[in-house]
Length: 188
Ligand code: AMP
Image 1 (cartoon, rainbow, N blue to C red):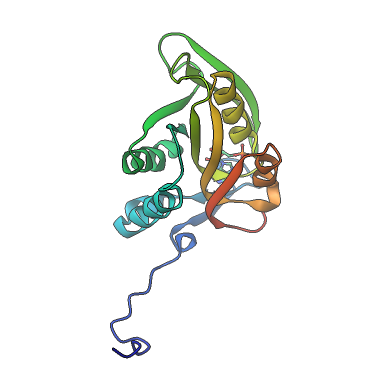
Image 2 (image 1 turned 60 degrees about the horizontal axis):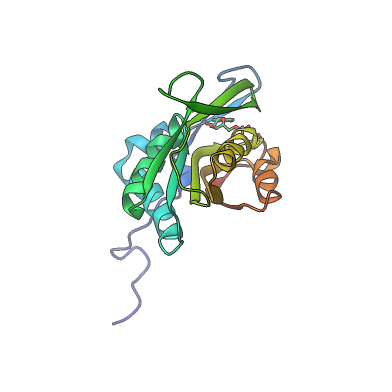
């Protein structure tokens, strides 16, 4: 069988970045908000993102997937289902019932707190962390700290979008944690 001619029944897979809209000055002046809504509403986009993450971790040994509220839950739950591992929600302050531990952190715009229920995982559990985007890395750093305080070990952190110029992915790598992202945008 010959090589397919250019354009002859060729299926061109769009890039993940092509589904992301950039909205200036949201939620504050000066912020370029990278919006995943277009990726989520397009069935091909959502499938592409979830499949790429799943493929990347398919042969990794992972006990739990922990995702960060709120957009991390969307991608994280689908990937946890595909990988056949349990899902741990890392939630914003005051949302989780029962006994929790929390970590405060600084954001690109403001400050916040992440919490996890205590005794959700066995000591030494290998955890994959998922969020929609990494900017300064403050959120992911807090999430890793929280999982460590819970007795788990973050094997890798995965993001749909990386803004490498803000230094977050480097910050997480310098903690000895592997980082995987589906697309990157220059600047902030
Ligand atoms: P950071 O802690 O600075 O790495 O920020 C990451 C978190 O804030 C993620 O949960 C993102 O959803 C959100 N975030 C930060 N910057 C942006 C941005 N420019 N566009 C969209 N979401 C952002």
